[in-house]
Image (cartoon, rainbow, N blue to C red; front, side, top):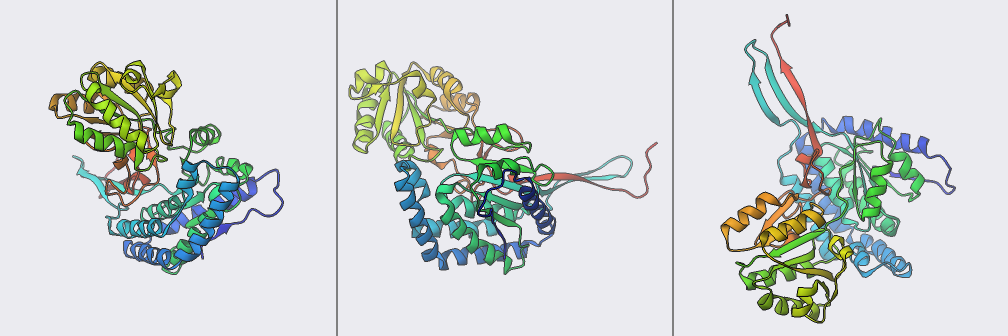
Length: 430
């Protein structure tokens, strides 16, 4: 059975020994997991999916306890939504395990191969990163997604969720770890930290001898703290300030449906629209209808002067609103002069996460796609599709707005690196 790492009753002042033990166990498991066959990994994923379904009652019981504690602690509605599990969400978690099992195993893939004039055969071969430390808040489904993606890509996972979701995470971890171990997966390949002590996390972030990469998911404060403390490379995005630009040549019925979906379908996610930009030529026709519909759904509109003239119910947007990731039913709205004005706004205030254009003009679409430097650029569709599962990756360990080494939703291939393999027949360098 894979281990749930115990912190102990009395918190010591120095967690370096504990962090080192966790790291060493993960490193040993990673060496074993790197050579596990694709069939064994897929069998484990199938067993993990079945276990999630059969353990749904136990998982939901622990999740209900987390929800109740979260309400007493005053968590926002957005955080409670992220924390909440349901039978439908558990079923989606199980389906993700099965989808990942169906994906091609990236480990061992020959990225390129060629022969030099001296007869040396050169190959670049895909291999696991090794040990991945995932740090995240609220969402218990991340435990399931990261465990599955790390297992299939041959990486050992050390999982550290937030204290608000501790019971849920432990229940999900126990379910997955036992199912995986029964199929021959190394016991320490999926470790769950059950001690929320920040000093233990700080010690883990210094465990660069055994942990290869850190992937934080959560609020900007968490991600910045991880990046500042870690001696291990961090793949990150600080926040998702996602825009939808409604062009002067947009289909306004399509634009209304897209903007409503991007904001309302699940406002607490990092790929939800936070700012809507509308061309001045269509604003008089478009803004009253979309603002009315958004307001009826409970969305607070914060607009610039031109927006407020067209929708007087809007409150005045401040400079901070253009930078804001609300993760809630709040939307900043600005009327722009043209597409270049929209692109310039995104360049100044955006977070390189996901930005969308709604337009029927091919030249405008091409300009937007070329000039908006975000990890995902959407054309005539909702920002909510910026997601590993929706991209056919099975799931994601996170969305990276970095440019090294991965960008956008991170799936199996993004959890690998490569090594050079050189075949010779006795050649000597002269």
